[in-house]
Length: 117
Image (cartoon, rainbow, N blue to C red; front, side):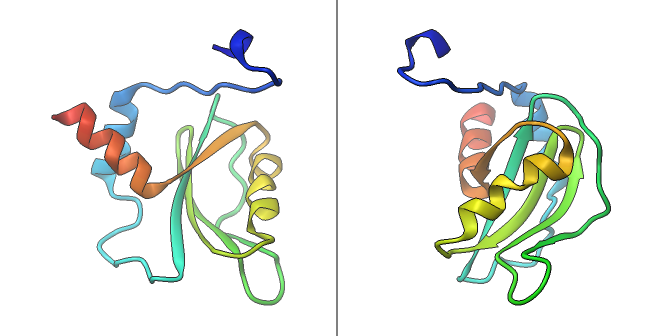
């Protein structure tokens, strides 16, 4: 797949069972997301270091990204829609010492629905 891309890219794979387990663990709990907040999951190639959580970015002022927890290769949190958010999401890699791909929680849920149907 990477050879067919016209640019350099990292590819992260995970077992479908790991996604199913993550959804079953319900890392966000029963509290519904606020309308101005997007839940996300970052998937790392390997389990890396786990910093003290939660991580709030930026560290002062109104938060744009909050990393709430981690389970094995998965890191989950929430972000606000803002022009600067993508830069703060990119900092998750540095905090956990590895490269990750980040997806909306709704995308993870849709994949799990397909896997379990």
